[in-house]
Amino acid sequence: MLTLIGITLIITGITFFILKNILKSNTSLNWFTTKRSIQILFLGILISALNGMFFYADAGTAYAVQYLSGGDKMITTQGLKLKWWGRIIPLSYETSIKDIIVDDLAELPQNGQGIYNRKAQKWEFSDAIKAEISTSVIVGVNINDEEIFLNMADRNKSEAKLIFGRVMPNIDAAIKNTCKLMDAQDYISGQASDFDRYFRDQLENGMYQVEQYYESENSNEILGDTTTVRKINVGKSSKQKKFRIKKDADGNIVRDNSNTLKQYGLKIYQAQVTGIDWESSFDERLDLQKNEVAQTQLEKQQAEREYYRAKKEVAKGESEKAKERARLEKIQIQQTIEAETAAKVAGFNLIKEKKQFEVEQFKAKSKKVAADAQYYENAKLVSAGLTPQERAEWEYKTAVGVAGQIKDLKLPNTYVTGSKNGNNDNLLNSLIGADLAKRMMSEKK
Image (cartoon, rainbow, N blue to C red; front, top):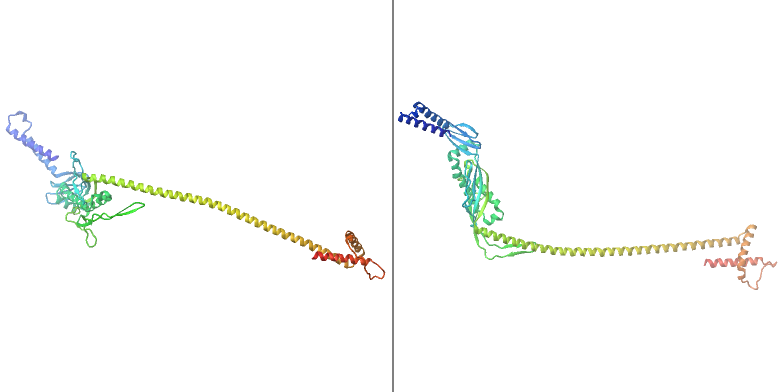
């Protein structure tokens, strides 16, 4: 701006100086005297000189200042800075480079300081499928090492040359190499993240060296679901040429380090694929494949549904069988418990009857023993000598007992007694005692 003002003042001063000398009789130029024209001329020169002496450093921009004396300096802070009529090379801290997929009638966003946009290019994958790939890369300069920064600025002279001459070719090489390593079918089948990883790794550490190899294109395929597994023989196989990352004997990746961004102290903050526009033939194939996959998934789900329905019926039958078994086992247990209870009750009753029988036996024996004891006591009393009172009582009881049985007693019609006096009392007593003894013996038997 100051340069423009200075040049304008210089031209104005020179113009009025010439007109004043040519048109001396013109009174309208009286204000523009020769002295005043020279003053305007020197003011313009001064302003132009001041513009070459100072410059304003913007925020977010690093400057390489190259002085007339041959030295240079890195400036990273904003504000009014001295450049002593030297040259400045501004470089943004972070520069955004985008490949954008646009229609034929659409326009790209405008470029600016630190922003570079270009139309996405078509790239060919390993299986010969082409697609426009849009990418977004953010590159940052190294402001921590002044020597590296100044060397990069000296070699590239401007930010535009650095981006268009160094960064973009590396982006193209990285995309090309990554497309070689992958089929379009592999990309849509879940390897998109691998594409981004390969792409960024090459920008940061150098391009991969790739090598060719051959793999069987048609191989036996195993298909199956939850119930069946089938092996499909697809016939004679053919070989397909493919590419892979070259590695040395130790398994390390072999890279092409002849032109890497590391040489310029650049750092990759972001590198990713933001969109892919496949060619129309592949889009049609994708649509057919999607329909086929959807149909296969539907049939698979139906097969699984039938499988689980059959499992459900079997499980239901097993459940009903188990329920019926449990019911019958419950009835069986109840009947068994009832039978065991009845058997135990019968056993207890038998034991009770047996015990009762034994009790009755013991009672009968007790009575018999008591009777025997009584008879024995009576016999002893008969044979033993008693007091007159006891004898009279015993004779009374005996008489009463004999009186009931005397009528049944059969005595012999003729008997001989040994008594001289003809006393029959002893005879009667002997007969009664004999009869009592006979009864006692019969009861004992």
